[in-house]
Figure 1 (cartoon, rainbow, N blue to C red):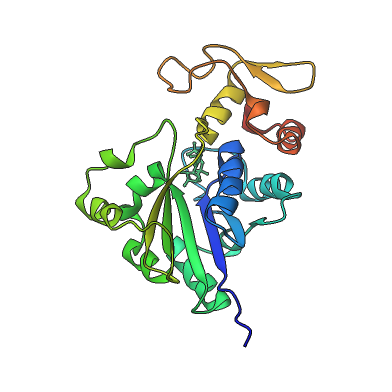
Figure 2 (cartoon, rainbow, N blue to C red):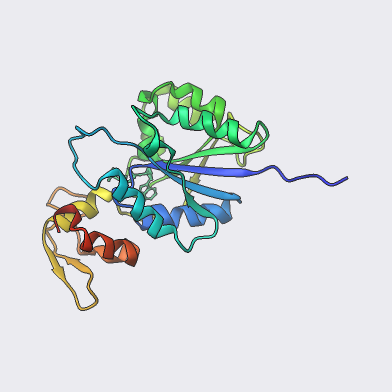
Length: 240
Ligand code: ATP
């Protein structure tokens, strides 16, 4: 009798304002190390009064689509941008569960910084009823050992080596570190920018401010796919 392999689906949530190599390279690495069939990058809706004005929801989505155009197993899941009203991760995972069936292994992926604030998310404990969690130790951010919340530490102490259930398990993973964030990129673009010969943006020493952990010479275009950089320039995003 033929058996059908159980599908393993990753869902990488975030703001993606803009998407950068830390997201894409991490997602690519996860495809092989955790053997996902597909990893979806799922941009969240953002409140119009958010105090960090950046790209619009439509622009964040377009940048993600450009970034993933040639990726076979990475895709965008735009459901949170199309849902009216506030959208919560728990609602998205409930929808995905009913679409993918009870057997599928759903894995919600988040960096250590996001995990450290997980207990403030709407119905956060229900997330584990709907999916597994994969926590990535993120370079330059809080170390998982330093999270001092008991409920989160209890979850971490029950970590598994690999998933074998559709939901309810937590796994920790350290990937190749990319010490970059969308915030650092937005600040760098808005601050000292100089076009270089290939049309990228070279950022000077102090562009990120003295207190920034990412305060160093960065070439922003090394951290963003070329098509996304072109889009940012063409649409004058982030103060360009
Ligand atoms: P911002 O600086 O605007 O907060 P960000 O760079 O943290 O943005 P998000 O879109 O908020 O990016 O992140 C989405 C998810 O990707 C989060 O779970 C976050 O922890 C993870 N992530 C972001 N950057 C990296 C990175 N460089 N390496 C690994 N994970 C990352």
